[in-house]
Image (cartoon, rainbow, N blue to C red):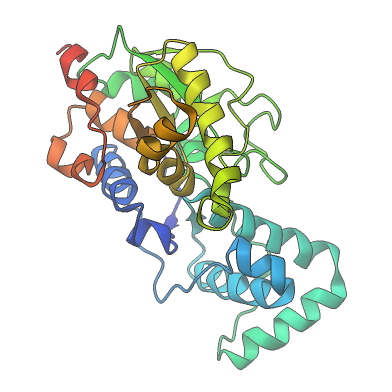
Length: 294
């Protein structure tokens, strides 16, 4: 087993609407005998919405988390695509813009952190860790219930693979598909796998946000997918929670389960259903347990 050290950075979403993501993520990593303690005294990453208003303030919030992790020489595992993007964007700007780095360093000192982030630790998405540190063959060897007969729409969202990801193809990523296929499930090909779900527009300009989410759900349905698997808490929320309203708006029957890739892995690994957080979802993925073969 790989001996790399990590801190788990939940961000705000995995302690709230993404609770099932946190439960299934921790259960899967525990099953794989990987130690991922929570980053101590973490704060908000700076968030994409805040970054759009005051980018420097967002960087200062992000770098505090990076500095804490670097003190213990542990990479950060950031499951939320927005957190992953903001933390990695901060690293890039520290390296590329000396004037911004200087202002960030001043803020870190005011926060009573002696160590200023020097770029010794990385921000990783759990998909990256599972693919590159654990490995597909190891994952396959841990599968106890194969998910043959289940057709999965692998949905990456727009933030994970662009613009800072180094572990997958930014325009046509494949690593989530590899994880899905390791469980025995079948992936469906789609050009919409990285199309935006609408993000926070579902809470501000509903008709725009709903239309963007509906296009993805309609594509999954058209492709004959039994469920959608995603890597982002906001994508999961947008695609699942508003389906009844989208059905009325677009006069189309949907009812497509939207789950996290860690939940799919958890079922394939034979982890107890109670540990995977399906009780937090509106649409229960019944087909997973109908077709899972021991």
